[in-house]
Image (cartoon, rainbow, N blue to C red; front, side):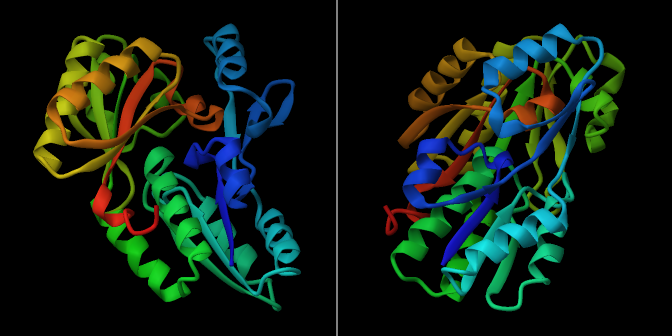
Length: 286
């Protein structure tokens, strides 16, 4: 079985290579042309983003033709392909992959809407890859992914809502738009429809980190968790959030990763947050 995802899963290259995961490209449209987001480091992207303010680039997803090409090549060595993608509530990537999969005749292509993104999407991709390596059936993998999807929390705060608003991704966070540059919102991905919703708002990033920690404590209590801290260009805030989690939660696995450039287009560099998963949902796969 071959596993496919997209770069919104924020998976390090070494991790994808180790597990043989294929990443479909997402593109950033700069005034001078289109760039595959995987071809830029996070810092290269944020330097470029800040240099072009107040203008911001846009993003575009892989066409169904790109997906059909990826699937067709993989079908030469595997008759089963599992493709997991960023929430359909935030991107058209899932539908593009689904349509691309319909064109494949010599392999079974299963396309999954993870209903999340970033670290939450990565949890599902990793679980799928580990389970596939262990010889699990596609049905067993899908059942586990359903449980992971229902138990994962993705939550973050921003220095400004400017990028979400200008990129058209603000959705149900619009109620906060009147104070774009003054508040530090706390935003989560709703598990029911995979869209953004507001948890709260604060005057400082540190207050928002406390709100994030309070929310995760409320959600998981003393349950052993895997916590992935993610940020754009807020390494000190990421380290502070890590310490808050370790002080107040039963953290069994913790890591700090960078937000991919394609997601950074919509958040700007001032983002920090976390993806959380109960460890019992992957312990048998580690």
